[in-house]
Image (cartoon, rainbow, N blue to C red; front, side):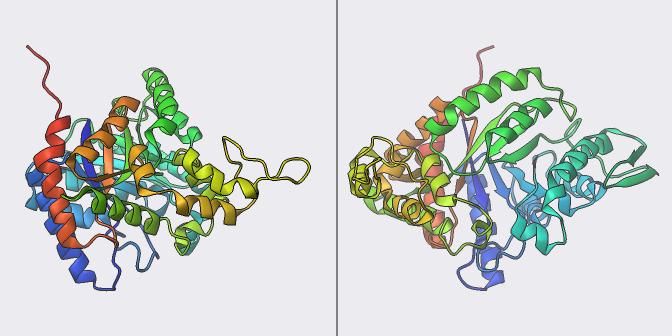
Length: 387
């Protein structure tokens, strides 16, 4: 199983230069520590939260500053860009890095879409048309296209990627319908919603079965499953767990603009994190009424009655529970290895850690990267098959 890092380029202050410098330092350290990849998001308008609107720029810089780590677009928001421009930029980074690019795709959320003048109702079809075009651009000597959103007269599009026929293709996925679509198109799943491995395991199994029968949109099938998680390793187990919990809950805090358009977000998060644990269920039993209006403890708490209750349950999910379920991989090296083995057992091919958040100072991120490289990554290194 591979271990990688995700970057939102978060900034608790508006010091753009500092976040760029610290991010590059961390990525160079991750390359030296043995991480498989660094992935950069594309976000717009999320002031104070994400400072990564153009991943191709920082990945271009990292292509010359790193030696082996793969460079992931995590993801390119296809509806925002002309497919020819996407093909050109991704191919250029692939050439600069001598074939280390991973090409993740997505379509974002209404808060950002409307800010860029994109009708959210069109984004699924725009993503689909662009995704169909881009591999053809890479594989064609002369490309032309007539579609619903884009038209291209016969043109030669350069450069072509270093990797042949092209870099691996992925899609950001938060729901089973997208997992099924990824399997149909033969592209990798980036399950970035931060879920417990036990919740994702049946979906991973189904995807792995279905992707074998894919009609690949590109030149080959990428049948890998990537799961997102919050990760932090420290020498003191307890304090590292608590910092991991803080990082996760700050990331999904109620003030986040990208959560404003989502319905029942905390009910969804509690379910994705494995539900209300038994040791907390009694705390909420007074909120659940039977048919006669009396309190009735339930093994599985029904949170559909209101967002305030769901948010309270979300807030009370503790660091130990989140670690034991693998929602966060945080603690000392032994604790992190145990949590990662839950992902491995569920069939995950790569775990992408959000480590550098606004809750974790740069110096602690650097120490965590060092500890991952020294103790954790070696425990999951893929051993080459015997000749």
